[in-house]
Image 1 (cartoon, rainbow, N blue to C red):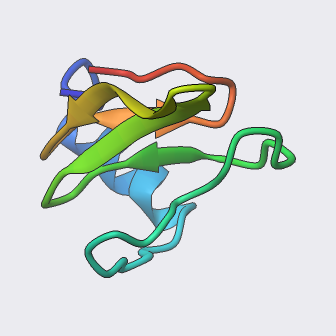
Image 2 (cartoon, rainbow, N blue to C red):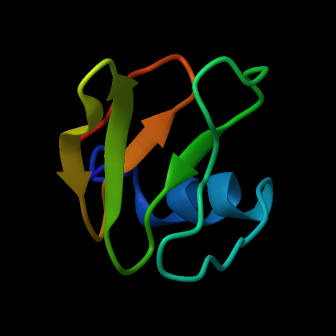
Length: 77
């Protein structure tokens, strides 16, 4: 989904510039207010995008395989 508009070669080149990071269930990718340093592509599994409010934790989106997110607050399908 995130990389669907790119050719196979372009996807390969983009992936070669990044690093694979494996996370355990429940582990945070980043927190609101952290310095922005990357774009994340979900290779497998699911990620919940959430925000802490006065009422508690609110899930904004759930992203899966092929989805992506950035620290700018965008979730990229």
